Length: 137
Image (tube, rainbow, N blue to C red; front, side, top):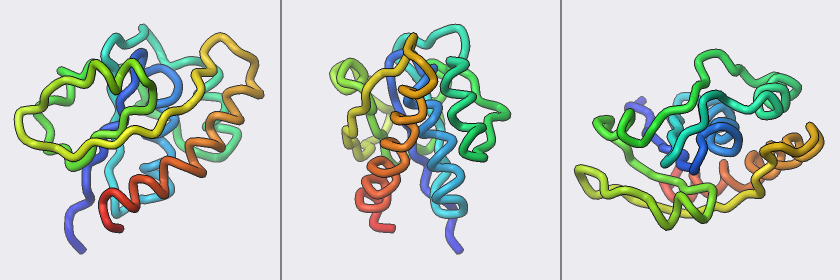
């Protein structure tokens, strides 16, 4: 089997949607995709609601922490997925050409756990197929 494709899930704060996207891609497309995430203006920590929503679905949360785009810029990225409109508009230029898609999700930051659960399920329902399609998996 060939090396997995690296998918960068990009958001503004890298504390909710992009972190859930990273965890879901690494679980649901294990062996095919290596999900990473970053933010254009990262928050100090991953939102508690995002961690709880992932754990309730049995998804690993160890090692999730907010990162800047600069932190991942030197990696060989095959696909960038922006998950919020702000990140789509401010997406940086990468050192080499990289395919980009946008799959927007509601920002549950500051909302009750139910919002995080709904966004988690929406990410799983729409992000995974979009990445499969974009990479021809």
